[in-house]
Amino acid sequence: MILELDCGNSFIKWRVLESDKVRVFAEGVVDSDAALINGLRSFVTLALKHCRLVSVRASEETSALVAALVDNFGIAVTCAAPSRHMAGVRNGYEDFERLGLDRWLAMLGGFRLASGACLILDFGTAATADFIAADGEHLGGFICPGMPLMRNQLRTHTRKIRYDDASAERALESFVPGRTTVEAVERGCTLMLRGFVLTQLELARSYWGSDFSVFLTGGDAELISDAVPGARLVPDLIFIGLAMACPLS
Ligand SMILES: Nc1ncnc2c1ncn2[C@@H]1O[C@H](COP(=O)(O)OP(=O)(O)O)[C@@H](O)[C@H]1O
Ligand SMILES: CC(C)(COP(=O)(O)O)[C@@H](O)C(=O)NCCC(=O)O
Ligand SMILES: [K+]
Image (cartoon, rainbow, N blue to C red; front, side):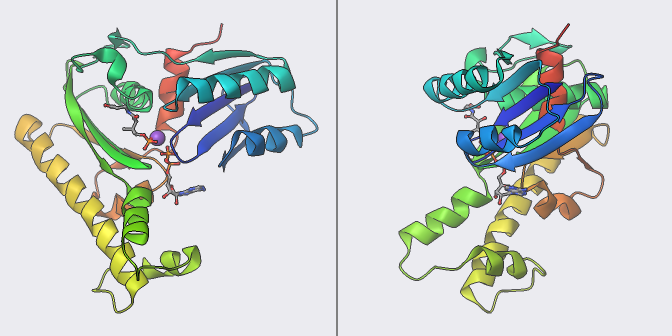
C-alpha cells in the first residue's frame, strides 16, 4: 500500500492506495501529524510499503513528519521537489523553486487531464490561480487569501465578529444579503472568492478564447463551483500530480 500526503498550511490530506496504485483503501483530512499517525495506526489491515508526499510547510516541519512516518511505519518516504519542467509543463516562475509545490503538482495533474490550455484554481488557506498554455508553458498565477484567512482576519481584527462553525455552514445556504453577522461575513467572503474566479476566467478568455479547461480543487472548491459551470471539480488533483512527480517503481 502507498500512503499519499498533501500537507497544506491548514490541513494534511491523506489517502492510502492499494498495491495496484489505483484503488483507495482509506482517505481523510487531519489537522496535525499526531492525528495522522494515530488515525493510520487504527487500521488493523494497513500494510504500508511507501509514502509520497508534498508539503508547503517549513522544511523542519516536513522533516519532523517524515521522521515520524519512518519511526512508526518503517516506510521509505519520497517528497515532491521543485522542477523547471516535467510532463510537458514548464514552470513559469523566475525562480522555479519558489513556486508552491502544491500549485506545481496541481498544474501537472491539470495539464495531463486537459491536454491543452488550462486554468487551475485551488481554494485552501490561500486561493491560487495558475495559467498553463496549450504548449505547456506556465504563464504564472495569482495568490490571495482563501476562506480560512479572510474569515480569521475579520474575527481577529474586529471586536464584534464572533460566531461558531455550525452557524457559518448554515449561512451559506443562500447568497442574498446577510441579516446576521455570520451571514454577512460568510457570504461576503465567498463572494470575494467568486469575484476572484470570474476575473481569472476573463483573463483566460482573453488569452485563449473558449479553448481552455478550468479545474477546481482544494477544501473550499465546492463553495465556488456553481459560479463556474464548465469547470471540473477534481478534489484529488494534487494527488494526480504527486503520482506523476514521485512515481514508485
Ligand atoms: N473534510 C474537510 N476537512 C477539513 N477542512 C475542510 C474539509 N472540507 C472542506 N474544508 C475546508 O477547506 C479549507 C481548507 O482547505 P485545504 O485545501 O485543506 O487547505 P490547505 O491545503 O491550505 O491546508 C477550510 O476552509 C476548510 O473549512
Ligand atoms: C500559495 C500557498 C501558500 C498555497 O498554500 P495552501 O493554501 O494550499 O496551504 C503555497 O502554494 C505556497 O506557500 N507557495 C509559495 C509561494 C508561491 O507559490 O509563490
Ligand atoms: K493546497
